Image (cartoon, rainbow, N blue to C red; front, side, top):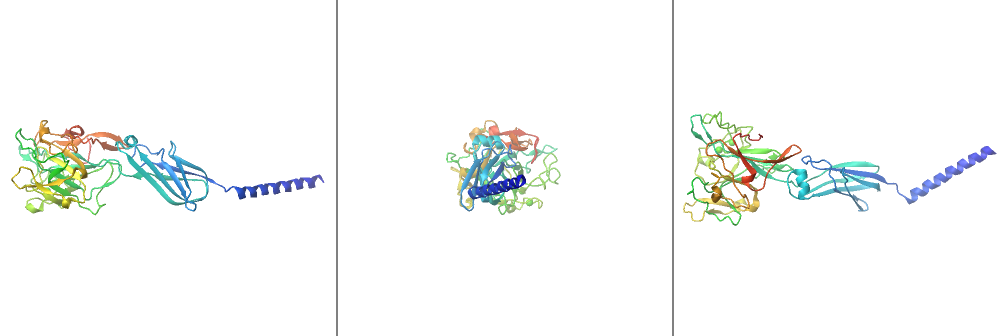
Length: 402
Ligand SMILES: [Ca+2]
Ligand SMILES: [Ca+2]
């Protein structure tokens, strides 16, 4: 009898549990805990992306759930209904955020997404943010002074321009224009002043090159650079070279300026040529002034329609391409000496100052200062004032650092 009661109780207990389980299934759908771990791009100072807005959209109901990431970069969705979800992440960086994370003070918008995530159990998804580049291309180094030969002769076919990706993302050099302003440096107090009105913010170019490519042929990684030379040869060992000069040949120069029309420039087949867009000087090959040139890089689809005009007051008929300041990516002005502010060719909106070397044929380059280093990537100083942003060096290191 006692034994029977025991079985009865056990049976009742099982029935009761089963009933409760059924009840629970009927009224409450089982949920899962799902986390999304968000990280910053590899070029950033930190990995964990805090305060990123993570949105899960249920593909069937179109219900949206939003959770911000915590200090660990994790957004936790507890009691999530199983199903198929679209996942998106947004993170707006204030200028102050960007300065900390990228070394450059500029607002930026980052995002990440994952489509059709079938979530049926507890789990985690890692997502890495990407977005618009913070920063851009800048001149890192310009060498224009030329050098002295062992017999004290002058040598000046060895000029180069190093263009650096100062941003957080890959930038393509394809269709990047490199331009040299017209106008003299202040060689003497009586040197002519470039007579274009600067108040409209334009530049007036005498030589314009374009880097060729199909759009994504020439990637420049963040913290990397390309070197563009007037003549991409090893000047130290060339038969007509100068042992005191530089190696700008294959492996150093990414592009060279080859002026086919003069019949007197030399084309190094090992270094690709840029496309020549405008060349209004009378030299055999491309030579910027050794007293200090003013250079720009820009991108534009409208170059063919830019006006080519004569300098006001000039009678020599020489044409300069008028390029609007709005398309200029970077502008750097060099000039002959400390007193040359009177002979600036660029508007102050593009370059508030200028830099100068100690003389001509002195084998000196102007080089941009490193502002900070973020995750191993040097961020160069770019305040649009070459007086502040550049220093002068005799230790010329294309694609390298002191
Ligand atoms: Ca050349
Ligand atoms: Ca070549």
